[in-house]
Image (tube, rainbow, N blue to C red; front, side, top):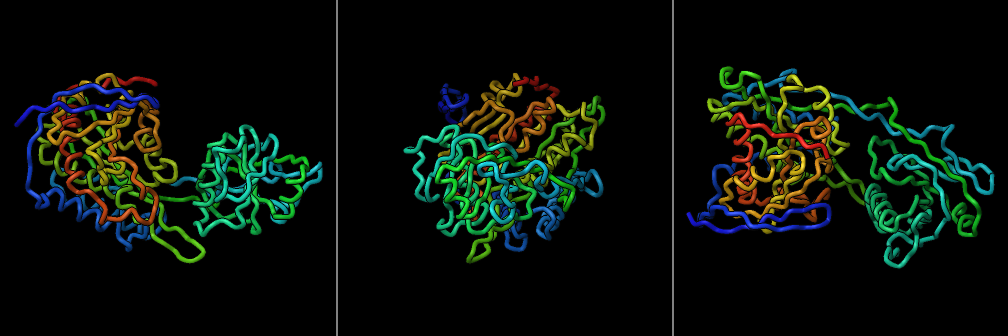
Length: 458
């Protein structure tokens, strides 16, 4: 074993800092996949298969996913299922519906007909569209570096846009409008659609669709008065399940019944429908890799349960992609007394380690974070990108909001994020094992010792 000097990359907002940390490294020239890597692969091959269809809530794939995870937990000695045979069902987010009395569009004071002249988008935020209207041209030709649109409403022509899936088209418009600090979007389209959805793709901007005829009037300087109000209704509420299990410490070693949560979300986003085809989004990295890590964490700690000083509750969360629904529900309705939960560790995308960089969110949520991470053996010489925030868009945020110290581990977002190219064949299994080897001592410090994590409110 040779001592080497490694680098922590510390991200504070958008500023980066660096400082050296001593760690031990080892040489391993064996290219044969380890037993752990083979188990990772077995989990991900199934979870990212076409049979599971992208693991979207209320589908057969969602059911098969939770049954698989439940089976994996139940077959590990020392792991007991909680809830109703390992499941915690929850419902959320009925369809997004506009409120008629609070949704309108007027041109020069004349009220237009919804569905004929204009239509709102359930994927965007409610609000009043204020400001001058700026015609930005065709979507694919907009150069956000050359237009001055701050505080203005962007009029975007998407009638000739390339063959993008519907939701991707909306996301692209939202990104361009946000980059130029627009106050809203008017989308020119010959088809005024109001699809059924419970998802929100953009929480900052309101969007109105208009016919080409209305768009011509807007280009000519007609004064517009626009208001949108959209809310989740009660129709078609979505159901999903958290999968919950526990590794119980011996009573005399854990007299206060303290608990540490280890979690990962099991859902993904299903399919994308284009005008030409339907493609599955397999979600191998996002987040079959995190679930595989969670299952193997359960195996690791269950084999050492006689050393535990705290119970470990394992949770595979449903509907993370729908706005952290499963973790939010569990944090509001834990299957153990809320006051006994002392920490939460989360895994979201651990399968695409690049440049040996492990991203760790939540470092600013507890006082002991820096010494804990610095002291953990780093045998693979990982670079640690430490992110202070406790409110990044993954499941650890649900626990931070309940005053619980938390860390979330990730190999980072790849170019295949939320794409049909997020495939099992691209998973970096040796990288997953490197992450596992670094994180297990971090968690061990709090489950094998009576130590506390002191919460910091950000």
